[in-house]
Image (cartoon, rainbow, N blue to C red; front, side, top):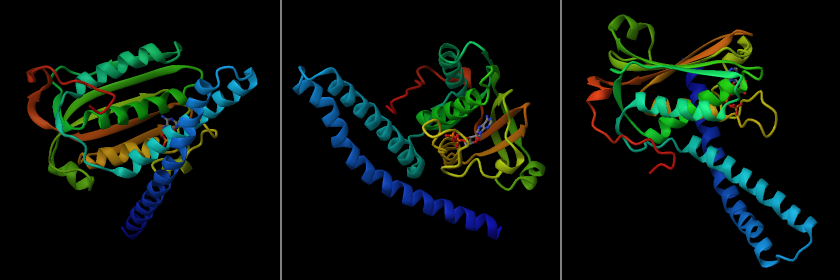
Length: 262
Ligand code: ADP
């Protein structure tokens, strides 16, 4: 328990530090980006090389701004806006996007019952959790494979709750994201939820995907489990407290999935 507490405190201070830096960095990047965007308009006759340099400046300032946004959303840990969410709808929407954008060597399948219970949650945040897991699944399968997203209803009983301290007796939905990728070596399993832990190359990964996802799931009262086998694949399970008996198809439209946060 002490180790857990120490870990939690350490993560909290990393979060505070990161958000402080991110705020400052944001103030630094904003004028750089504005300048990079404005200069080509002010000097349309500048030579090609200058335009090229400004373009590189703009692309990198944007990348910096994206990174800052990720760090801030990781560190914020805000409640978000709670609505009755049709997770089934969200998963179907995400799978459509994945089928459009993932390499054709990755087979995407979805298995979600029509009577999946609803969750009181923030759609943008839950969307982000699922996307982060799917992006990792993609990265784990450079030579292709299967990505499966499934959902089911689960009533957690006392026996289960006693075994898992994070679980409470009551209705949950379980969203499983599994891949047939490279897997996670045992020595990394303990670290993957740490902010900034990444095995990806510089510029490919920030190491914030899973820590952000975990933060969001926890703020919804849920928990995450992971099972992985080297060279066989990885399975993440997201448990979210649900509202029992209210099934997806009983909710009236529209429960809009939006990427902008409103
Ligand atoms: P990032 O994706 O930016 O590296 P994450 O926090 O999302 O940051 O993931 C941390 C690390 O966990 C990854 O770099 C990778 O080593 C490992 N990981 C996460 N998901 C998977 C997966 N599905 N298969 C294999 N490794 C994974």
